[in-house]
Image (tube, rainbow, N blue to C red; front, side, top):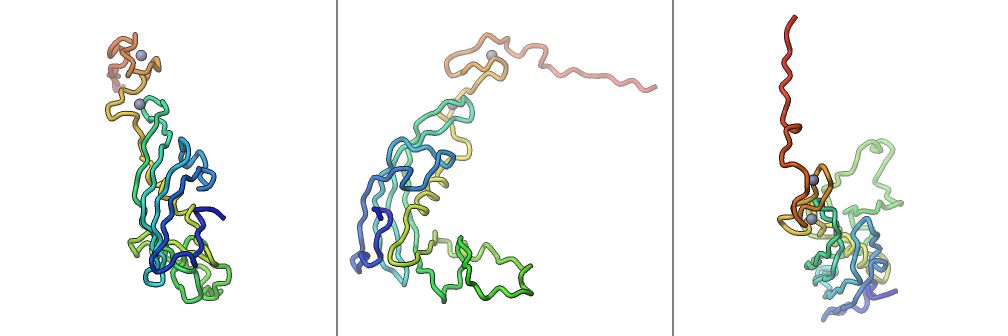
Length: 195
Ligand SMILES: [Zn+2]
Ligand SMILES: [Zn+2]
């Protein structure tokens, strides 16, 4: 039980404010997800709204990324707003979330080949999560947000010159000794003679 598992009963009509510095470990974040430089600070407001718990706030921290061009590691500021809604997982809740419910009786033998449409939950246009019991788990939601905030092609700087493809020198530090466009790289036209 920590800052990331608030009790639902603590979320009163006036809401609950949650401010904490959390580590990668507390977020369940592993290095292949994102490498955090120290803990991240989260500032969240939790409020009861329409049978749901609305979570809004910000997350800030620093992530170590590797540039796709020069392969150097660099610190990247992480800052984004969080918008999520948690619904109680119950019998009358037809929306199937990420975890399949083991006791689901709807799935008959005949329908076993039919796959549930995955888009169902995404149609909400809202980051929706579920909670069970007396507390909500914020860590998986925050972890997901951090992963989604990672760029596909991280660059240490917008105009990173990258590495020389031949000698491997970091061209941000200056030009290498390789001849500029050596003749060997020009396309050789191979003539085929018909016999
Ligand atoms: Zn770079
Ligand atoms: Zn070179």
